[in-house]
Amino acid sequence: MMKWVNCEKMNVLGWIVIVTEILLFSGCAGIQPTVKYQPSEQPIPKSQWPLGTATSSEECGVCHQAIYREYAFGFGADLQFKGIVYKSTQDMILNLPANVSARGTAHFLAGVDPFPIHARGVEEEGKSCDVCHFPEPFKIMDIEELNIPGTIPKPVARPKSQEAGGMTCASCHLTPEGIIRGPYDVKAPHQTVQIGRMRTSDMCAYCHSLGKRVVGKQTQTFLEWREDFNKPGLGRQYCQDCHMPRTLRKSAEDFDVPVRAVARHLWTGGHSSQRLRTALGLVAIQPKEGKPELEFHIINIGAGHSVPTGSNRRAVYLKADIVDSRGNSIVNREWMFAPWYGDRPDEKAFLEEDKKRPDAESAIQADAQGPHEATIRAGEERILSWAPELKTDNYTVRASLVYDLNRYNERTFTDDQTVLSSTSLSVKVE
Image (cartoon, rainbow, N blue to C red; front, side, top):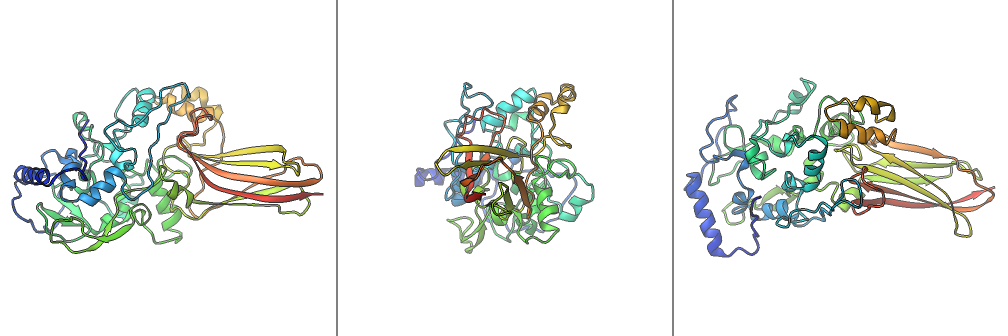
């Protein structure tokens, strides 16, 4: 495990020593101009970055202090990675290592978060299946190139001996040619290249899409954005516009660089209550006056992709409870929205077939829960009807949407849940 640097406590002498070491180590004693980018098929020797994408992010943080604080400590966001259990509440709670911040970003914690590591060990026999957490440098293809093969290629994984650092600054910013890329033309102590597509969703495609587009399937966030949000014209936002909002500032505080619109390296998502609560809207109505019939409208108005997205472990529950005029709970109901594990809907009928799969444990967990509602696609209004048996009376309908990071653990464990939205409705049954 790497030793994380506390930027706020480091003294001036410490910064001078580290900067000097990096400059000597990289052989870049002077400012290097931006180079003309000529992508090659074969990577050239990375003289400045011999460790490639395994280069420690702390090295980048020496100059890019504010960006490092965001990436490593979630500075300025409401991110929080709480302890989580794999299945049983009797199991050990999987907390982050003591030397990393529980408010770090998802990219910073990739490769060190004990929950997916534990799940991988149980379900995938410990193999390093998620190369997105440990990628070698990759070329950014444009959105049309990505569409031609039908399936977006995955990055090449680093050697297993270099996995400990997880996602680093170099994972995104280092080109296969060993040059640091960014959205601006800059002069820096290392070779740089300007690539405008870093500000587009093309940058996110490799790690946030899995296989061909299958509506409702897990780990297809980029494809959901492209097919459901971008192409129909629901908006012009890229992934970065919501998950990396820009701030006017210097990209490196102690250098003579202009103040510009620089992205905040936070990637708020499932661990940010603020981000979650802007995703879905909830409305309850009684479509026919006096009749015991209800409709719940769940509207995806705040996300440029499906909700929930990513791992099939994630779910959103719609919980509805009906209370009579005396305050007694009469009847309740629950619906679950979640991604499918594979290319077909989760269904208990496939349990026997799942036992023969190499990823049997993962597939069985999904299918064991049986059919559920598909995820709410970008721009979609999902209408769910319910006609409970109610006697003549005045009732109050209380409904809420709850986001769950792991739907496979016991429901009594709620530390990984967030209430997205709540509503109530007065109903008269004649």
